[in-house]
Structures are given as structure tokens and as C-alpha cells.
Image (cartoon, rainbow over all chains, first blue to last red):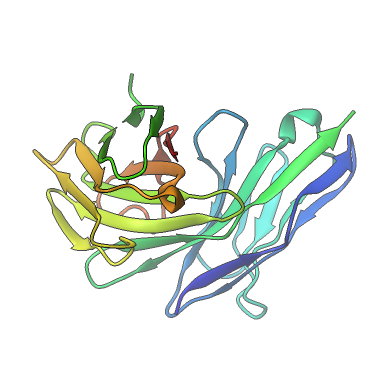
Length: 114
Length: 116
């Protein structure tokens, strides 16, 4: 079946530290991969995406590369800010017979302290 | 507004009561998804609508849960005889049909349900 696994949280970092949140997936076919972010009190929003192997998604200083050989899509940022404190969800989308199924990981909570 | 709208934002109910949660998707979005977010858990898929039909209801946890969509727009998720384990945030998301694979889902802020 299709599934997404993320590193357990919560993660606490000091401002300007390097961030990595690991994500691995299991999927049939050729999934698209996504990172969504949920800031406190807000709805989920798309952070970045990659639709095929070796693609790199990037946004707001965050990056993730679609690695088919390791079935991974790890999220990285070189220097985190307090405003990056949020819950991060890795997700995949596969084309089922009649629709695009989107499956989310459990989420990783990030707290950045000044 | 132009985003996905959900109501109520918060609902506290007594065990055994029925509740209705509403989702108003972005205009023109034919695909609509319901998810449940429980404390410490990820987003659990509940149901998908394409227009007014639901080709995938596989995520509904029990027959106490039902959902409908009318006019290809507003959707209602109904939970009958609520139980304490139903307490969660219920999220609705929409997209243009066939674009969730390469595009994105647009989420509402959710309806937080607390069953006492």
C-alpha cells in the first residue's frame, strides 16, 4: 500500500540552526511528493513539491529532493527562524483509478527558540 | 473570502449527540477531501468527492459517519451518536479535479470537535 513515514517530533532548534526533517515513503506507481506546513492557528498550506524523481522543490529557504532510489523526500533549511515554528507534514499523491489520492505522514512539530 | 471555509470552527457536544460539520470549498473546485487530525496522529483520510459523488468512502471509520455534497459545492460531514474517540479536528480540502497529483490541496482551518 501507500504510506508516508516521518521522523518523530517534537524538534526544538535554536535560531539559525540547520534543519532536517526525514521523510520516506512507500508507493505503487509514480507518486508526487509534497511538504505541507501548518502554522499555529492556521490551516495546512503547501510548502513545496516535486513531481518526478530527482526534482528539487524549494520555497522560503526550504528544499527537498525527490530520491526514488532511497524513497525519500527529506526537508532541509540552512538557517531556521522563529517564524518557522510549525508542524510539517510530508505527503504523497498517487493516481488511483478515479481520482488523485493524497496521503499524509504523521507530522513533525518544530519549535525554533531565539 | 476566496479560501476553503469550514464551520463551526469549534464544537463541543455530549456523547451520543449528532453533529454536522460544513465545508464550503473554493469556487470551481470539483474535488473535495475530508481528513481527520487527532492529537499526536497525522491526517487520516475520510472521504473524497468528485462533484456530488463519492468514489472513495474507504476512510470513514464507522457507519456513524456519513457525508454528502450538493450542487458540486458545499459538503456536510455528519457524525451520529458521537463518541469520545470522535474528538479531533476535521479538515476539509479542495482542488481542481485531477490536479491534486501535481498541484496542491487547499485546506480550510478545520472544525475542532470535542465530545464530552
